[in-house]
Amino acid sequence: DTGVSQDPRHKITKRGQNVTFRCDPISEHNRLYWYRQTLGQGPEFLTYFQNEAQLEKSRLLSDRFSAERPKGSFSTLEIQRTEQGDSAMYLCASSGRGHGLLRAFFGQGTRLTVV
Amino acid sequence: AQSVTQLGSHVSVSEGALVLLRCNYSSSVPPYLFWYVQYPNQGLQLLLKYTSAATLVKGINGFEAEFKKSETSFHLTKPSAHMSDAAEYFCAVSDQDGGTSYGKLTFGQGTILTVHP
Image (cartoon, rainbow over all chains, first blue to last red):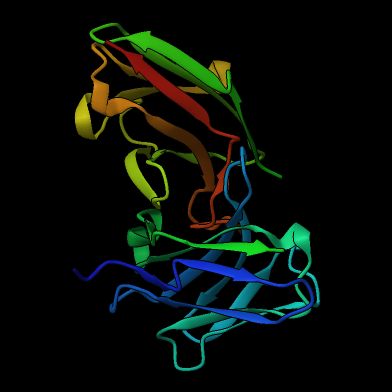
């Protein structure tokens, strides 16, 4: 399977701890997106990369959040000093060049629970 | 700014009945529009997309949607529901080429479809 993969699938952490999630996009895709989905809501955009450059960050992405895509391949999303409000599903998606931008492939997500 | 409104957070139909999930959008530039489906604990799968070609778009699993600019709508339909259609459905919008949000999706709140035997 060469789809988008996310690790871990589930993470339970205590409030105040740091967590890091990983996303491996489809190999030839140059764009990578992070979204957050809370219960009963649609996904909300957090940030995206074109290759290794982070081009846009949502105001939802507080200074406790940081995302990287160091070599334009996999990406990590780190949350520092987690809060209960960070509990959500974190979705990663990737898309290709040109009109391939319109065909985003989503991973299965990482479900974060902060206790 | 773009936004999407999905009317009805829950829709329930009988197997074999028509499925109609409503989506209205707001966009200051010509939009691209999408419908995604999400099964429990899964990521999102693209059902269909409107990219300014034909206004009636056919997707996977027998779903289709019609873009109506005058109504700013992009409702999703399927003539005959199947039990396997039970899932959550999301409408989304993106800018067309040259828009600052090109490729970035703004989602509605979702509609949970229940199919009764």
